[in-house]
Image 1 (tube, rainbow, N blue to C red):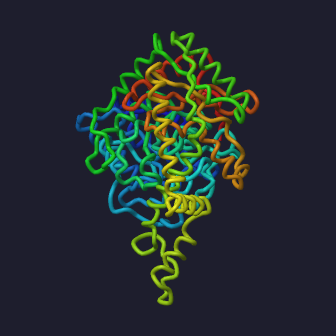
Image 2: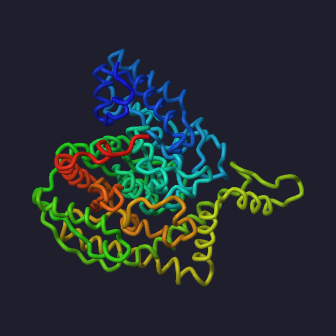
Image 3: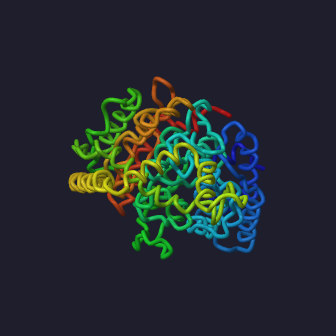
Length: 500
Protein backbone atom coordinates (compact mmCIF):
# COMPACT_ATOMS: atom_id res chain seq x y z
CA UNK A 1 0.00 0.00 0.00
CA UNK A 2 1.35 3.45 -0.95
CA UNK A 3 1.57 5.94 1.93
CA UNK A 4 -0.39 9.21 1.83
CA UNK A 5 2.67 11.47 1.42
CA UNK A 6 3.83 9.49 -1.62
CA UNK A 7 0.36 9.81 -3.13
CA UNK A 8 -0.09 13.56 -2.58
CA UNK A 9 3.38 14.31 -4.00
CA UNK A 10 2.50 12.68 -7.35
CA UNK A 11 1.73 14.86 -10.35
CA UNK A 12 -1.77 14.66 -11.83
CA UNK A 13 -0.40 12.77 -14.86
CA UNK A 14 1.35 10.23 -12.61
CA UNK A 15 -1.76 9.84 -10.44
CA UNK A 16 -4.00 9.20 -13.46
CA UNK A 17 -1.54 6.62 -14.84
CA UNK A 18 -1.43 4.73 -11.52
CA UNK A 19 -5.23 4.70 -11.29
CA UNK A 20 -5.57 3.51 -14.90
CA UNK A 21 -3.05 0.67 -14.30
CA UNK A 22 -4.68 -0.39 -11.03
CA UNK A 23 -1.61 0.44 -8.95
CA UNK A 24 -3.79 2.89 -7.00
CA UNK A 25 -7.56 3.21 -6.69
CA UNK A 26 -9.32 6.54 -7.10
CA UNK A 27 -10.74 6.09 -3.59
CA UNK A 28 -7.21 5.67 -2.13
CA UNK A 29 -6.06 8.83 -3.90
CA UNK A 30 -9.11 10.82 -2.79
CA UNK A 31 -8.82 9.64 0.81
CA UNK A 32 -5.13 10.61 0.87
CA UNK A 33 -5.98 14.16 -0.21
CA UNK A 34 -8.93 14.43 2.17
CA UNK A 35 -6.59 13.36 4.98
CA UNK A 36 -4.12 16.03 3.91
CA UNK A 37 -6.87 18.67 3.94
CA UNK A 38 -7.87 17.57 7.43
CA UNK A 39 -4.25 17.74 8.59
CA UNK A 40 -3.19 21.13 7.22
CA UNK A 41 -6.12 23.24 6.04
CA UNK A 42 -6.90 24.61 9.47
CA UNK A 43 -3.59 26.50 9.11
CA UNK A 44 -3.78 27.28 5.37
CA UNK A 45 -7.54 27.91 4.95
CA UNK A 46 -7.51 27.06 1.24
CA UNK A 47 -11.02 25.56 1.28
CA UNK A 48 -14.37 27.14 2.07
CA UNK A 49 -16.24 23.86 1.66
CA UNK A 50 -14.95 20.27 1.50
CA UNK A 51 -17.38 17.90 -0.23
CA UNK A 52 -16.08 14.69 1.36
CA UNK A 53 -19.05 12.46 0.50
CA UNK A 54 -19.40 13.83 -3.02
CA UNK A 55 -15.68 13.36 -3.73
CA UNK A 56 -15.66 9.77 -2.46
CA UNK A 57 -18.77 8.97 -4.51
CA UNK A 58 -17.07 10.31 -7.66
CA UNK A 59 -13.94 8.28 -6.85
CA UNK A 60 -15.94 5.06 -6.34
CA UNK A 61 -17.60 5.62 -9.72
CA UNK A 62 -14.16 5.82 -11.38
CA UNK A 63 -13.03 2.58 -9.73
CA UNK A 64 -16.24 0.87 -10.87
CA UNK A 65 -15.63 2.03 -14.45
CA UNK A 66 -12.11 0.65 -14.37
CA UNK A 67 -13.30 -2.66 -12.90
CA UNK A 68 -15.77 -2.99 -15.80
CA UNK A 69 -13.00 -2.34 -18.31
CA UNK A 70 -14.44 1.00 -19.44
CA UNK A 71 -12.01 3.48 -20.95
CA UNK A 72 -10.87 6.18 -18.51
CA UNK A 73 -10.05 9.77 -19.47
CA UNK A 74 -6.56 11.25 -19.05
CA UNK A 75 -7.44 12.70 -15.62
CA UNK A 76 -9.94 10.12 -14.35
CA UNK A 77 -9.82 9.85 -10.57
CA UNK A 78 -7.50 12.82 -10.08
CA UNK A 79 -8.63 15.18 -7.27
CA UNK A 80 -9.22 18.88 -7.93
CA UNK A 81 -9.90 22.03 -5.91
CA UNK A 82 -12.58 24.24 -7.53
CA UNK A 83 -12.63 28.01 -7.04
CA UNK A 84 -15.84 29.00 -5.27
CA UNK A 85 -16.98 31.13 -8.21
CA UNK A 86 -18.29 28.18 -10.29
CA UNK A 87 -21.79 26.94 -9.56
CA UNK A 88 -21.88 23.34 -8.39
CA UNK A 89 -25.22 21.59 -8.06
CA UNK A 90 -26.00 20.72 -4.45
CA UNK A 91 -22.76 22.25 -3.12
CA UNK A 92 -22.52 25.78 -1.60
CA UNK A 93 -21.22 28.54 -3.90
CA UNK A 94 -20.46 31.78 -2.06
CA UNK A 95 -17.95 33.65 -4.28
CA UNK A 96 -16.23 34.54 -0.99
CA UNK A 97 -19.15 36.82 -0.06
CA UNK A 98 -21.62 37.02 2.82
CA UNK A 99 -24.32 37.98 0.31
CA UNK A 100 -24.33 34.37 -1.00
CA UNK A 101 -23.57 32.61 2.28
CA UNK A 102 -25.27 29.22 2.27
CA UNK A 103 -26.55 29.51 -1.32
CA UNK A 104 -26.73 26.08 -2.99
CA UNK A 105 -27.04 26.32 -6.79
CA UNK A 106 -29.57 24.13 -8.61
CA UNK A 107 -27.24 23.61 -11.59
CA UNK A 108 -23.61 23.04 -12.59
CA UNK A 109 -21.43 25.55 -14.42
CA UNK A 110 -20.16 24.27 -17.78
CA UNK A 111 -16.65 23.93 -16.31
CA UNK A 112 -18.07 21.87 -13.42
CA UNK A 113 -19.98 19.67 -15.90
CA UNK A 114 -16.87 19.11 -18.00
CA UNK A 115 -14.82 18.14 -14.93
CA UNK A 116 -17.47 15.63 -13.85
CA UNK A 117 -17.76 14.21 -17.38
CA UNK A 118 -13.98 13.69 -17.39
CA UNK A 119 -14.23 11.82 -14.03
CA UNK A 120 -12.12 14.43 -12.24
CA UNK A 121 -12.85 14.21 -8.50
CA UNK A 122 -13.95 17.59 -7.09
CA UNK A 123 -12.74 17.81 -3.48
CA UNK A 124 -14.51 21.08 -2.65
CA UNK A 125 -14.62 24.84 -3.17
CA UNK A 126 -11.66 27.13 -2.53
CA UNK A 127 -11.36 30.49 -0.81
CA UNK A 128 -11.14 33.69 -2.86
CA UNK A 129 -11.36 37.45 -2.73
CA UNK A 130 -15.03 38.40 -2.63
CA UNK A 131 -16.48 38.32 -6.18
CA UNK A 132 -12.87 37.86 -7.41
CA UNK A 133 -11.99 41.45 -6.46
CA UNK A 134 -8.50 41.48 -5.00
CA UNK A 135 -4.88 40.35 -5.25
CA UNK A 136 -4.39 38.70 -1.86
CA UNK A 137 -7.50 36.67 -0.84
CA UNK A 138 -7.75 39.01 2.16
CA UNK A 139 -11.06 40.34 0.81
CA UNK A 140 -12.81 37.02 1.44
CA UNK A 141 -15.73 37.39 3.84
CA UNK A 142 -14.56 34.11 5.41
CA UNK A 143 -11.03 35.15 6.36
CA UNK A 144 -7.68 35.14 4.51
CA UNK A 145 -5.74 32.18 3.13
CA UNK A 146 -2.07 31.72 4.02
CA UNK A 147 0.77 31.07 1.59
CA UNK A 148 2.17 27.57 2.31
CA UNK A 149 5.70 28.92 1.82
CA UNK A 150 5.12 31.32 4.73
CA UNK A 151 1.70 31.39 6.36
CA UNK A 152 2.14 35.06 7.29
CA UNK A 153 2.29 35.94 3.56
CA UNK A 154 -0.52 36.23 1.00
CA UNK A 155 -1.10 33.37 -1.52
CA UNK A 156 -2.12 35.83 -4.24
CA UNK A 157 -5.61 36.70 -5.33
CA UNK A 158 -8.31 36.46 -6.17
CA UNK A 159 -7.68 32.71 -6.49
CA UNK A 160 -5.43 32.31 -3.45
CA UNK A 161 -7.38 29.31 -2.18
CA UNK A 162 -6.73 27.35 -5.37
CA UNK A 163 -3.01 28.18 -5.49
CA UNK A 164 -2.55 27.45 -1.77
CA UNK A 165 -4.31 24.08 -2.14
CA UNK A 166 -1.74 23.13 -4.80
CA UNK A 167 1.29 24.42 -2.92
CA UNK A 168 0.27 22.65 0.29
CA UNK A 169 -0.37 19.36 -1.58
CA UNK A 170 -4.06 19.33 -0.71
CA UNK A 171 -4.88 18.82 -4.41
CA UNK A 172 -2.79 18.17 -7.53
CA UNK A 173 -5.11 20.26 -9.73
CA UNK A 174 -7.23 23.38 -9.27
CA UNK A 175 -9.41 25.74 -11.25
CA UNK A 176 -9.10 29.51 -11.05
CA UNK A 177 -10.45 32.56 -12.84
CA UNK A 178 -8.43 35.44 -14.24
CA UNK A 179 -9.90 38.94 -14.68
CA UNK A 180 -6.68 40.94 -14.25
CA UNK A 181 -4.22 38.24 -13.19
CA UNK A 182 -6.12 36.17 -10.62
CA UNK A 183 -4.77 32.83 -11.90
CA UNK A 184 -1.23 33.92 -12.77
CA UNK A 185 -0.41 36.15 -9.78
CA UNK A 186 -1.34 33.45 -7.20
CA UNK A 187 0.64 30.91 -9.22
CA UNK A 188 3.69 33.17 -9.19
CA UNK A 189 3.76 33.77 -5.43
CA UNK A 190 3.13 30.09 -4.54
CA UNK A 191 5.55 28.45 -6.99
CA UNK A 192 2.83 26.78 -9.06
CA UNK A 193 1.64 26.90 -12.69
CA UNK A 194 -1.39 28.96 -13.72
CA UNK A 195 -2.82 29.59 -17.18
CA UNK A 196 -5.22 32.25 -18.48
CA UNK A 197 -6.51 30.79 -21.76
CA UNK A 198 -7.54 32.97 -24.68
CA UNK A 199 -10.68 34.94 -23.76
CA UNK A 200 -13.70 32.85 -24.74
CA UNK A 201 -11.78 29.55 -24.87
CA UNK A 202 -13.28 28.29 -21.58
CA UNK A 203 -17.01 28.75 -20.96
CA UNK A 204 -18.15 31.38 -18.47
CA UNK A 205 -21.61 29.82 -18.12
CA UNK A 206 -22.23 29.27 -14.41
CA UNK A 207 -19.19 31.32 -13.44
CA UNK A 208 -20.41 34.20 -11.27
CA UNK A 209 -19.61 37.35 -13.27
CA UNK A 210 -17.31 40.14 -12.09
CA UNK A 211 -16.24 41.83 -15.34
CA UNK A 212 -17.75 40.05 -18.32
CA UNK A 213 -15.34 41.25 -21.00
CA UNK A 214 -12.31 40.25 -18.90
CA UNK A 215 -13.24 37.17 -16.79
CA UNK A 216 -11.70 33.88 -17.90
CA UNK A 217 -11.56 30.49 -16.17
CA UNK A 218 -8.40 28.43 -16.46
CA UNK A 219 -6.25 25.56 -15.16
CA UNK A 220 -3.92 25.62 -12.13
CA UNK A 221 -1.42 22.84 -11.41
CA UNK A 222 2.09 22.06 -10.17
CA UNK A 223 3.53 21.18 -13.59
CA UNK A 224 3.06 22.45 -17.14
CA UNK A 225 1.86 19.05 -18.41
CA UNK A 226 -0.75 18.79 -15.65
CA UNK A 227 -2.04 22.26 -16.55
CA UNK A 228 -2.26 21.23 -20.22
CA UNK A 229 -4.22 18.07 -19.40
CA UNK A 230 -6.69 20.12 -17.35
CA UNK A 231 -6.86 22.85 -20.01
CA UNK A 232 -7.93 20.25 -22.57
CA UNK A 233 -10.72 19.02 -20.27
CA UNK A 234 -12.32 22.41 -19.56
CA UNK A 235 -11.82 24.24 -22.89
CA UNK A 236 -14.11 24.18 -25.92
CA UNK A 237 -17.10 25.91 -27.46
CA UNK A 238 -20.24 26.28 -25.33
CA UNK A 239 -23.51 27.50 -26.94
CA UNK A 240 -24.70 28.56 -23.45
CA UNK A 241 -21.99 31.27 -23.36
CA UNK A 242 -22.40 34.06 -25.92
CA UNK A 243 -18.68 34.96 -25.64
CA UNK A 244 -17.50 31.37 -26.22
CA UNK A 245 -15.22 30.91 -29.24
CA UNK A 246 -16.37 28.33 -31.78
CA UNK A 247 -12.88 27.06 -32.65
CA UNK A 248 -10.90 23.87 -32.02
CA UNK A 249 -8.96 23.66 -28.75
CA UNK A 250 -5.25 24.20 -29.59
CA UNK A 251 -3.03 21.09 -29.16
CA UNK A 252 -1.92 22.07 -25.66
CA UNK A 253 -1.10 18.55 -24.37
CA UNK A 254 1.00 17.71 -27.40
CA UNK A 255 2.86 21.02 -26.95
CA UNK A 256 3.49 20.30 -23.25
CA UNK A 257 4.90 16.87 -24.10
CA UNK A 258 7.20 18.31 -26.78
CA UNK A 259 8.48 21.51 -25.20
CA UNK A 260 11.03 23.44 -27.22
CA UNK A 261 12.03 27.05 -27.92
CA UNK A 262 14.56 26.23 -30.63
CA UNK A 263 14.26 28.90 -33.36
CA UNK A 264 11.46 30.79 -31.59
CA UNK A 265 11.47 34.58 -31.25
CA UNK A 266 10.84 35.63 -27.66
CA UNK A 267 9.95 39.23 -26.87
CA UNK A 268 10.97 41.18 -23.77
CA UNK A 269 8.88 44.32 -23.18
CA UNK A 270 10.79 47.26 -21.72
CA UNK A 271 7.67 48.50 -19.88
CA UNK A 272 7.68 45.34 -17.69
CA UNK A 273 10.54 46.39 -15.43
CA UNK A 274 11.76 49.46 -13.56
CA UNK A 275 10.60 51.25 -10.44
CA UNK A 276 8.62 49.08 -8.02
CA UNK A 277 10.13 45.77 -9.14
CA UNK A 278 11.90 43.71 -6.49
CA UNK A 279 15.60 43.13 -7.24
CA UNK A 280 15.32 39.36 -6.76
CA UNK A 281 12.36 39.17 -9.16
CA UNK A 282 14.31 40.96 -11.89
CA UNK A 283 17.35 38.79 -11.21
CA UNK A 284 15.37 35.57 -11.68
CA UNK A 285 13.64 36.99 -14.76
CA UNK A 286 16.97 37.94 -16.37
CA UNK A 287 18.25 34.43 -15.66
CA UNK A 288 15.15 33.02 -17.34
CA UNK A 289 15.74 35.15 -20.45
CA UNK A 290 19.36 33.96 -20.54
CA UNK A 291 18.13 30.37 -20.23
CA UNK A 292 15.71 30.84 -23.15
CA UNK A 293 18.61 32.11 -25.26
CA UNK A 294 20.68 29.11 -24.18
CA UNK A 295 17.84 26.82 -25.27
CA UNK A 296 17.89 28.27 -28.79
CA UNK A 297 15.46 31.19 -28.69
CA UNK A 298 16.11 34.58 -30.26
CA UNK A 299 15.48 37.41 -27.79
CA UNK A 300 13.82 40.54 -29.22
CA UNK A 301 13.46 43.84 -27.29
CA UNK A 302 9.97 45.32 -27.57
CA UNK A 303 8.49 48.75 -26.86
CA UNK A 304 4.76 48.73 -26.00
CA UNK A 305 4.10 52.26 -24.69
CA UNK A 306 0.36 51.81 -24.06
CA UNK A 307 1.11 49.09 -21.46
CA UNK A 308 1.93 51.90 -19.01
CA UNK A 309 -1.76 52.92 -19.17
CA UNK A 310 -3.16 49.41 -18.66
CA UNK A 311 -3.61 49.60 -14.89
CA UNK A 312 -5.60 52.84 -15.11
CA UNK A 313 -7.78 51.55 -17.95
CA UNK A 314 -8.44 48.27 -16.16
CA UNK A 315 -9.56 49.97 -12.95
CA UNK A 316 -12.21 51.87 -14.91
CA UNK A 317 -13.42 49.03 -17.15
CA UNK A 318 -13.56 46.27 -14.51
CA UNK A 319 -15.45 48.31 -11.85
CA UNK A 320 -17.86 49.63 -14.50
CA UNK A 321 -18.76 46.10 -15.57
CA UNK A 322 -18.91 44.90 -11.95
CA UNK A 323 -21.36 47.65 -11.00
CA UNK A 324 -23.66 46.35 -13.72
CA UNK A 325 -23.17 42.63 -12.99
CA UNK A 326 -23.62 42.94 -9.23
CA UNK A 327 -26.94 44.79 -9.57
CA UNK A 328 -28.64 41.36 -9.54
CA UNK A 329 -27.72 40.90 -5.85
CA UNK A 330 -30.67 42.86 -4.54
CA UNK A 331 -31.85 40.73 -1.60
CA UNK A 332 -35.10 39.97 -3.42
CA UNK A 333 -34.30 36.97 -5.61
CA UNK A 334 -31.69 34.78 -3.86
CA UNK A 335 -28.95 34.93 -1.28
CA UNK A 336 -28.92 37.15 1.80
CA UNK A 337 -31.97 39.28 2.62
CA UNK A 338 -31.79 41.89 5.39
CA UNK A 339 -34.53 44.15 6.77
CA UNK A 340 -37.50 42.26 5.32
CA UNK A 341 -39.64 42.70 8.45
CA UNK A 342 -42.65 44.44 6.91
CA UNK A 343 -41.47 47.94 7.84
CA UNK A 344 -39.08 48.52 4.92
CA UNK A 345 -39.70 49.12 1.23
CA UNK A 346 -38.11 46.93 -1.47
CA UNK A 347 -35.50 49.65 -2.08
CA UNK A 348 -34.65 49.76 1.63
CA UNK A 349 -34.35 45.96 1.80
CA UNK A 350 -31.95 46.05 -1.17
CA UNK A 351 -29.89 48.81 0.45
CA UNK A 352 -29.72 47.04 3.83
CA UNK A 353 -28.87 43.71 2.19
CA UNK A 354 -26.00 45.20 0.18
CA UNK A 355 -24.70 47.07 3.20
CA UNK A 356 -24.59 43.83 5.21
CA UNK A 357 -23.60 41.48 2.39
CA UNK A 358 -20.89 43.26 0.40
CA UNK A 359 -17.39 43.88 1.77
CA UNK A 360 -15.40 47.15 1.51
CA UNK A 361 -13.54 46.32 -1.73
CA UNK A 362 -16.73 45.29 -3.54
CA UNK A 363 -18.49 48.47 -2.42
CA UNK A 364 -15.48 50.53 -3.51
CA UNK A 365 -15.53 49.06 -7.02
CA UNK A 366 -19.31 49.31 -7.41
CA UNK A 367 -19.18 53.00 -6.49
CA UNK A 368 -16.22 53.67 -8.78
CA UNK A 369 -17.87 51.83 -11.67
CA UNK A 370 -21.25 53.48 -11.19
CA UNK A 371 -19.57 56.89 -11.19
CA UNK A 372 -17.56 56.07 -14.34
CA UNK A 373 -20.77 55.07 -16.15
CA UNK A 374 -22.87 58.00 -14.94
CA UNK A 375 -24.27 60.66 -17.22
CA UNK A 376 -21.67 63.26 -18.14
CA UNK A 377 -18.71 61.06 -17.15
CA UNK A 378 -19.14 58.03 -19.42
CA UNK A 379 -17.03 59.36 -22.30
CA UNK A 380 -14.41 60.92 -20.05
CA UNK A 381 -13.80 57.75 -18.05
CA UNK A 382 -15.24 54.49 -19.37
CA UNK A 383 -15.09 55.58 -23.03
CA UNK A 384 -11.48 56.74 -22.70
CA UNK A 385 -10.49 53.50 -20.97
CA UNK A 386 -11.92 51.50 -23.86
CA UNK A 387 -9.83 53.56 -26.29
CA UNK A 388 -6.72 52.73 -24.25
CA UNK A 389 -7.77 49.07 -24.43
CA UNK A 390 -7.73 49.32 -28.22
CA UNK A 391 -4.22 50.82 -28.11
CA UNK A 392 -3.01 47.96 -25.90
CA UNK A 393 -4.50 45.42 -28.31
CA UNK A 394 -2.70 47.14 -31.21
CA UNK A 395 0.59 47.11 -29.30
CA UNK A 396 0.22 43.36 -28.84
CA UNK A 397 -0.62 42.90 -32.52
CA UNK A 398 2.54 44.81 -33.54
CA UNK A 399 4.60 42.84 -31.03
CA UNK A 400 3.36 39.49 -32.31
CA UNK A 401 4.37 40.46 -35.83
CA UNK A 402 7.95 40.40 -34.50
CA UNK A 403 7.86 37.56 -31.95
CA UNK A 404 6.16 34.22 -31.23
CA UNK A 405 5.71 34.82 -27.49
CA UNK A 406 6.42 37.54 -24.94
CA UNK A 407 7.97 36.92 -21.51
CA UNK A 408 7.96 39.08 -18.38
CA UNK A 409 7.96 38.76 -14.60
CA UNK A 410 4.46 37.68 -13.53
CA UNK A 411 4.43 40.01 -10.53
CA UNK A 412 6.69 42.91 -9.55
CA UNK A 413 7.34 41.40 -6.10
CA UNK A 414 7.17 38.11 -4.24
CA UNK A 415 4.38 37.41 -1.72
CA UNK A 416 3.88 40.31 0.70
CA UNK A 417 2.74 40.00 4.33
CA UNK A 418 -0.97 39.57 5.07
CA UNK A 419 -2.31 42.98 6.10
CA UNK A 420 0.56 45.02 4.62
CA UNK A 421 -1.49 46.50 1.74
CA UNK A 422 -4.98 46.06 3.18
CA UNK A 423 -5.46 49.80 3.73
CA UNK A 424 -3.67 50.90 0.55
CA UNK A 425 -5.75 49.92 -2.52
CA UNK A 426 -3.28 51.45 -4.99
CA UNK A 427 -0.37 49.40 -3.60
CA UNK A 428 -2.58 46.30 -3.81
CA UNK A 429 -3.57 47.04 -7.41
CA UNK A 430 0.10 47.27 -8.45
CA UNK A 431 0.42 43.51 -7.86
CA UNK A 432 -1.35 43.08 -11.24
CA UNK A 433 0.92 45.44 -13.18
CA UNK A 434 2.30 42.76 -15.54
CA UNK A 435 -0.82 40.63 -15.92
CA UNK A 436 -3.55 43.19 -16.74
CA UNK A 437 -2.56 44.03 -20.36
CA UNK A 438 -3.23 40.43 -21.42
CA UNK A 439 -6.77 40.50 -20.03
CA UNK A 440 -7.53 43.77 -21.79
CA UNK A 441 -6.38 42.30 -25.12
CA UNK A 442 -7.83 38.79 -24.60
CA UNK A 443 -4.54 36.97 -25.27
CA UNK A 444 -3.40 33.73 -23.61
CA UNK A 445 -0.82 33.77 -20.79
CA UNK A 446 0.88 31.44 -18.32
CA UNK A 447 2.86 31.82 -15.11
CA UNK A 448 5.34 29.15 -14.06
CA UNK A 449 8.02 29.07 -11.34
CA UNK A 450 11.47 30.40 -12.22
CA UNK A 451 13.21 30.03 -8.88
CA UNK A 452 13.25 31.78 -5.52
CA UNK A 453 14.12 35.43 -4.84
CA UNK A 454 17.45 35.51 -2.98
CA UNK A 455 16.37 38.22 -0.51
CA UNK A 456 13.38 36.33 0.95
CA UNK A 457 13.56 32.77 -0.46
CA UNK A 458 10.02 33.06 -1.86
CA UNK A 459 8.85 31.93 -5.34
CA UNK A 460 9.16 34.11 -8.44
CA UNK A 461 6.94 33.60 -11.51
CA UNK A 462 7.86 33.84 -15.19
CA UNK A 463 4.98 35.01 -17.39
CA UNK A 464 4.66 33.78 -20.98
CA UNK A 465 2.17 35.56 -23.26
CA UNK A 466 0.93 34.19 -26.60
CA UNK A 467 -1.44 35.55 -29.27
CA UNK A 468 -5.14 34.71 -29.06
CA UNK A 469 -5.91 31.06 -29.95
CA UNK A 470 -2.20 30.17 -29.85
CA UNK A 471 -2.41 28.78 -26.32
CA UNK A 472 -0.25 25.80 -27.33
CA UNK A 473 2.76 28.14 -27.58
CA UNK A 474 2.50 28.77 -23.83
CA UNK A 475 2.87 25.07 -23.15
CA UNK A 476 5.61 24.55 -25.71
CA UNK A 477 7.75 27.29 -24.16
CA UNK A 478 6.66 26.57 -20.59
CA UNK A 479 7.55 22.87 -20.82
CA UNK A 480 10.99 23.66 -22.23
CA UNK A 481 11.72 26.19 -19.48
CA UNK A 482 10.36 23.90 -16.76
CA UNK A 483 12.49 20.96 -17.93
CA UNK A 484 15.61 23.13 -18.05
CA UNK A 485 14.94 24.52 -14.56
CA UNK A 486 14.33 21.08 -13.09
CA UNK A 487 17.52 19.76 -14.68
CA UNK A 488 19.59 22.67 -13.33
CA UNK A 489 18.05 23.37 -9.94
CA UNK A 490 15.26 20.85 -9.23
CA UNK A 491 11.59 21.75 -9.01
CA UNK A 492 11.35 24.55 -6.42
CA UNK A 493 8.01 23.46 -5.00
CA UNK A 494 8.67 19.74 -4.69
CA UNK A 495 12.22 20.18 -3.39
CA UNK A 496 12.02 23.28 -1.21
CA UNK A 497 8.49 24.14 -0.10
CA UNK A 498 8.29 24.12 3.69
CA UNK A 499 6.51 21.23 5.34
CA UNK A 500 3.21 22.00 6.99
